[in-house]
Length: 129
Image (cartoon, rainbow, N blue to C red):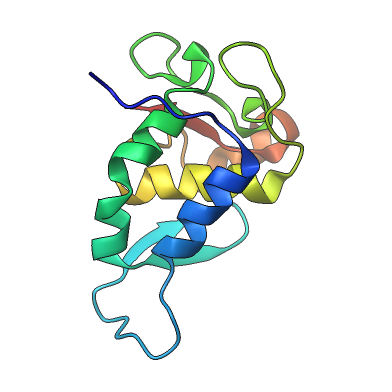
């Protein structure tokens, strides 16, 4: 049975922070993920240990984000969960969740970065695989 986890900013931030490298760790095996503003390098072992949780969090987003049912949706809609509740108002936390999804290859960008300027608000679309 798939893991169910409540989509909350503190949960996303805790996973995000744990997946980053700690002071003095060897970063040569970093798993890269390019966010909207920042580029991130994740610790491969800790990222892998949180993969099931990341997938569960992504599954709490609206179905429009899912490639198979909605085809992908704007980052701007990522503040709402699949139940119609606003789970965060901070773009930084949404970017953390989407970049974690990119790093574990559970998210793709239907439009290249060069096309973002023509999308609503100049923001990317994300599709959950």
